[in-house]
Length: 278
Image (cartoon, rainbow, N blue to C red):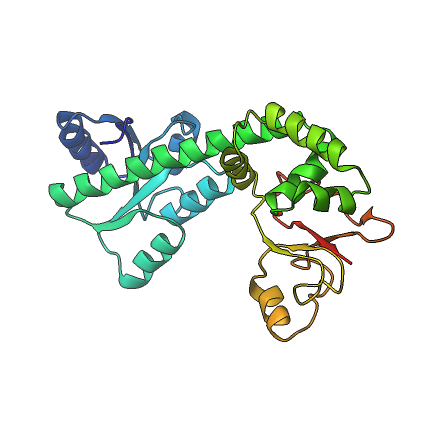
């Protein structure tokens, strides 16, 4: 059972609000009722794990609009829709936007409780993930620009020698940077470092050695696994085009250079990783 028992009810029908309040309070839930979307946004503590029982049709705006508002501010509120006149299309719309369930009135207690428990579990997990991400970003802010470059290549699976070649540095210097960034990120093992990378949105990629891989051409290839258009481009034997999805490049074997600040986008949802090529 989830740690949180907080349930918000948003319905413009007072009789339904009162009925649900009595039912759920009797079952041990911490229930708060709101007569409109505006009242919910003004009064509810949405920074805590909670379930929102939301009527589709409200006097001031639709439940779908409130759902979108909560998504826009990344509130992490788990929504269970309820309606007296819904249809399949409405249910599909709600679920595609992340609703936990779509119930029709009159509500059956067993279905309602099951949906609430699932919503609370989902909300608690979402908050746990958000807190981990926030902590990871705070730790990441401690790193120097060079430590961030080294981190990106470590997460891509590069060895110290490869990183030194890519950054025109010495292997001993890279080892120092790795030790420092591990300490600053409070990571004791490589597995913990990879977890922090995932929390930062920096996914691990695939490695190609010298002379191996489609684009290695005698250099070092470190690239994330291609997806979407990039995957289709790779499948056709072509380089991904510049722009989103094309990745970022660091060249070794001669003058190494960073084409892009590989971490400028961390925190903005951009998960592109550096590619080291010859």
